[in-house]
Image (cartoon, rainbow, N blue to C red; front, side, top):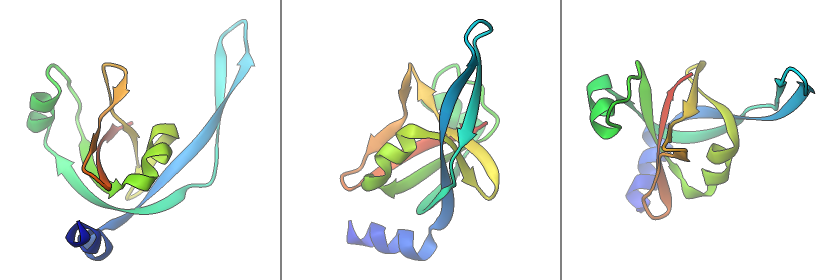
Length: 117
């Protein structure tokens, strides 16, 4: 997997993981406000996924734009807790399939599917 590490360092691009805190402003109305923290930059391999491939992977899903990220496994908690992920200043969120994030373990790396927010 050292080849993958070299590939991420050479060909990868910087993405930003944005964490946040959700605050209930009015319990009667069930209104919430999200306060975003400063983004955390990480390096990842970013691949676009065509809508046809995404529909094949996640049957019945209709999403216009999605990306697949290959990142170091040490960032798994950041992805799980993220409010949004910025790739080229476009907002994405980690895709939930049946209530779980679509994270595939590749040993010391992860493959994560993110969709346009």
